[in-house]
Length: 217
Length: 226
Image (cartoon, rainbow over the protein chains, first blue to last red):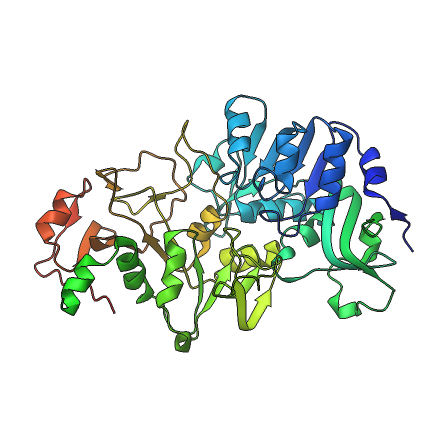
């Protein structure tokens, strides 16, 4: 059984400069309470790994606006002009990674693989500085694993042992990121007794989850 | 006004979307990019049994829900609210891109900034000006079985179909078809071939509006816009 943590307590455990994987796709399936708590704590110097930086005032966009982020590893910043402006001003370093490569690099980091081989990015800027490996006559880029100090996960429901269930397009990066960080903090819309989420519906086994946010006050 | 005149006067984006819709094969899995490409779904009848994928995690994307009926956890890749059709499946990002890279996606329709005589597409970055990032576009172009580019023929009077892309490429792969408001163009081993022209648009006008070299067959039929 997990102890229910307040979001402010969880934020206190996260040091400035940490590398943090954050679930969500344009704010859908993002851990909004944890993001608010990090902004409130005034955290600085984060490296964020996430699909996108949402938009100003939404999800990860709040961390960008708050000046909490030094570097972001992401596939898309096009809907957040603030991220682009801070990148051009040299305040945030942005590493753009193709979306399918990003999720597989995180997965590799979480499942004990030394990297992945993908044809995505061959013949583009993404290839620069990377090793090309030929397998059975086909060329692939070697892409390296990504891990975080923390993963912040949003789920539809959690049970008392931390099993997580997701819904619709709010899955996105969450189930993969829950594998790939030293400390995994999950927030759910509802916490239910053990047994309510059937084993077949569990997408993230509770053994991966270190801390569960208690219900919203 | 007769029907032909209505088609000539049709909004350019609608013309492109209607023409691309004819390329969609019944019973296939199709990914539509954000913006203009997403309009294609409006012209694909439900009887065709097509499943649309949104790479953020749904197979079986449906129309926008009625006002006030939105589900906050069901959006397309542009972040807009959608519905899911009967038979839909929700998936995580690893499954979603596994489908794309793994050859399970029959077709993608994407917007473009430039396409060149090699059939190379550039659509994710204008250095120093606009750097939105590639999102899923590089995986889609590298992995989809068929890639159709849907875009306006020109931007601010300049041809978007160019001899060689000046913008960073999205992939080294040659795209399969280009559909614009003026023409349908097929990239191949021997360069770009003009295969159809928009209603009321002459071959000369298309060649004039295109900086890339176009192979022009003797007969270039008008595109059907049903």
